[in-house]
Every structure is written in structure tokens, then in C-alpha cells.
Image (cartoon, rainbow, N blue to C red; front, side, top):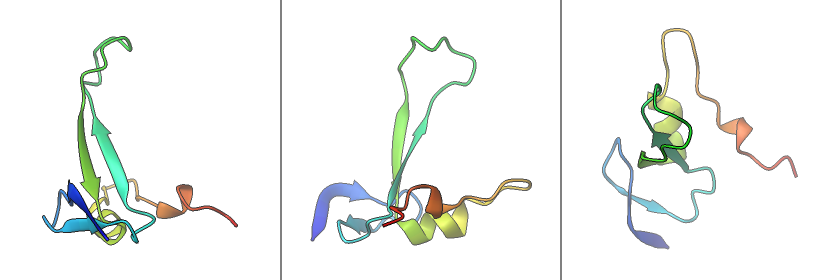
Length: 69
């Protein structure tokens, strides 16, 4: 089942609810006060997140969000 209005930031395709490890990325200004809740959210397929969220010194890992059971 495709969730209306939820598209992957990277590939632009809709995110299906069966992608149980799809993620939401929230971005805010690093130097604002913690009380400033202005932010922008992006949604990613699990595979797009793993493939594209790789930095020079850090790797993105979906297992942080996975249910161990």
C-alpha cells in the first residue's frame, strides 16, 4: 500500500508502508536554541538511506531502527 504524499527524497518514488525500515530525516539549524523547533523533514526508502547516507567518516546503519524480535 502506497502512503499518499510520502515520497523518497532521493529517488522521488512513493514510499510503500511495507518498507518497514523507511526513515524520516529531520534537519534543523545546529546552532539554534533547543527551544527553536523549526525543522524540515525528509523521507527515505530504507535502501535509498543505506545507499546514499554515507559520509567520509560515518556510515548510516538501519539496524539502529530494527526491532530485534
